[in-house]
Amino acid sequence: MDEPVVAFDLGRMVFGEAPPLFLLEIALRTVIIYAYTLFLIRWIGSRSIGQLSLVEFLLVIALGSAVGDAMFYPDVPLIHCMVVITVVVLLDKALSYIVARNRKLEDVIEGISIEVVRDGGILWKALKRMNVGHDELFEQLRLKQVRHLGEVRAAYFETNGLLSVFTSDDASTRPGLVIEPPWDVSKPKEVRAGEGAGERRRLACVRCAEVLEVAAGETVAPCPRCGGDVWHAVDEGSSAFR
Image (cartoon, rainbow, N blue to C red; front, side, top):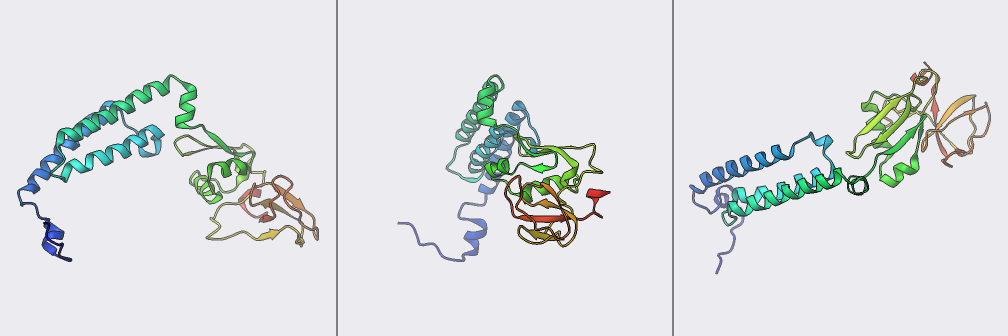
């Protein structure tokens, strides 16, 4: 019958119940599995984390689960772990070979690039289908040195999750929804549908970035493009008008 576990037993917590020599076995197991896994990964090729495809990302998860157990569990033979790693890598290699020769299967497994910005406007329905929020989109755009959406001719979420951005030649004259600085740092003046504009100015729809010019005293209407009822003032002293 197993003895009851003694809570806060520092010896058990720090060193465990295996003999001290088992620490050397753990070190040897780690070296063997690490070297074997490195050899297989070098064989299939490697890319940075931001460039991993869905299949390669699944490979990383599977390898992580298989590799760790054999490094320190005494009842897991090394050969079992090496078989698992080999099969996982061969499956990845075979699937990559098939996907590279079948475009439809590639689209199903890897996904497709999705356009999310066109001519300064946000394709908000595409964002909704991807379950991507505006904050995430704006963060990715700011990392590309975009200050307002008027600068953007097109932007695409690629299959690896990165955002490709193509700027417009007329960015210096076309206004757009201001995203720099981030709104949680300094939020532009907000105007809602049904309110009076107060003065003649340009407004940008928060949902789709449609730009609307309203006259002084005019009641602001919902966005004609997406029906959104929240607008941000486009400051004529901002980068959108320089």
